[in-house]
Image (cartoon, rainbow, N blue to C red; front, side):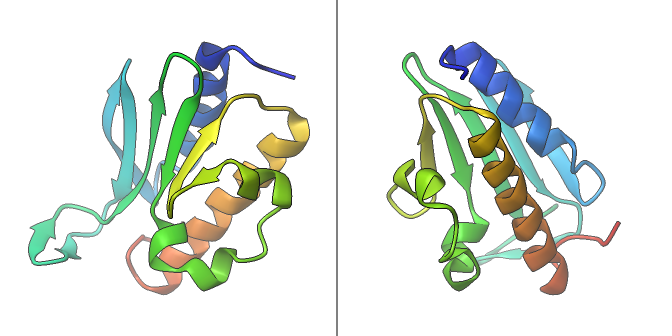
Length: 127
C-alpha cells in the first residue's frame, strides 16, 4: 500500500504516460501532468490541438486525478469499482490518498476505457 503522495503521483503519471500516442502530454511539471488527444477539434466554442483527457495534480495530503471521460461519457463508467468510486469527489475528480495493486488495476482499466471511448468518438487516434 502506497500512502506517500509523491509515490502516488508517480504511479498515476506512469499510467497516463503509457498511453502516449493516442494522448499527448501538454504539461509535465511538478504541479501538474496534463494529457489530451492529438486530433485538432472543437472543445466547446474553442478549437484546441487535442481534446482534454486527464490531469494529475499532487497535493500535500493526496493526489488529484481529473478524468474528463467520466464527465463527458458518464454512462460508460457507471460500473467502476466501488473502491475507486469512493475516491470520486464531484463529477470528474478523484482524490487518491492511498493506492495498492488492486486500485492501480482499476485506475488502469478506467483510463483504458476512457481511451477506447474517445477513440470511438474520434477524439483520439487509434493506436
